[in-house]
Image (spheres, helix red, strand yellow):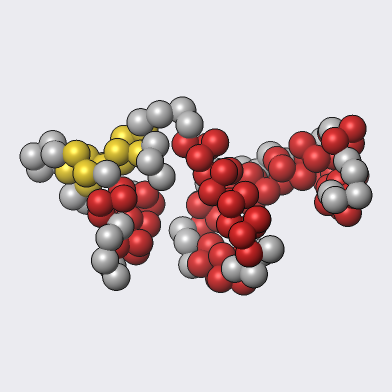
Length: 134
């Protein structure tokens, strides 16, 4: 999240997402801004590390909980905008295609993941990781 800057359209003042996300309504407000639903704000891309920070955050969540939060994550994603769901599904497919393409990184810890990814790629073919944006 720290790779984004939220800029108020009215006066140009910059607000960091961490500052906005404080308080009980903060995460929802931040989600609306990131989704682009608020007419009073615009989201400006700040740094190229956004993807790396997102992957690191996901890894930290998985490492700290063993995935115990997965049901909540899925339920929250299911309420997101349909285009964002399509983009997220494409991201998940890209991950599976990556795993299948790099079996040399397989060991007992990720064997089931690589085998599942290989089956998904075999079923969907070479263009399965490409989803349309409507």
